Amino acid sequence: MKTACAERGGRTAAAIFLFFLFSFFGWVLEKLWFYFAYGANADRGFLTLPFCTVYGSALLLIRALLGEPFLREQSYPRNLLRFLCYAALAALIASAAELATGLLFEHAFGVRLWSYRDCPHNLFGYVCLPASVGWGFLIPVALQAVWFPLERRLALANGVWLRAANGVLACALVFDFFFTAFA
Image (cartoon, rainbow, N blue to C red; front, top):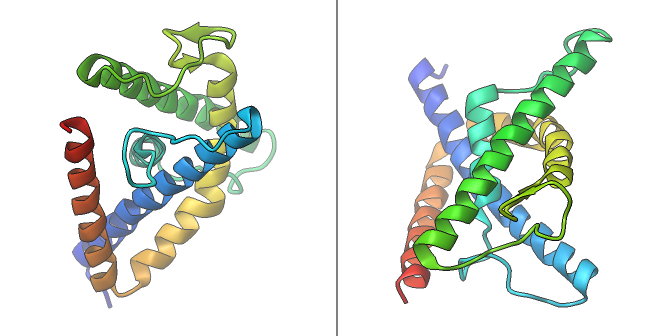
């Protein structure tokens, strides 16, 4: 039987791995969106590696602050109200992460990674109401349907390969960041 410390370590390692996985999924989503919206295969993101870490970071932050949505535990209308509150808070956290990342990269590195300037109700062109509402509804579903089931499975697995993969991915990401930022 696993100890509480080992179980917590397994869940932490799983959450870190999911940060990398969802950062990759975010990169794929960006590439697909840009291709279908503009017909071009554009380089998306700041890094050379296929990661848009704002996606993984926002989900990791939402996971840490809000926990699991548990959308099926309560009956209607309580489950709907819980979903709407969770969606609103998730949208606020994701939008704050998006705004902070956009401002940081613009001011620290002189790079504008994306622009919502043509969208209605935008703030500095880094966040806009339609995208925030969309993230608010997508995030609880993604966490409930993908993140938390994978996190539980990964936490039960032998953690050696997971910790090794996290270490390799973290080193590669840090190296890529410094290589790209200071090249």
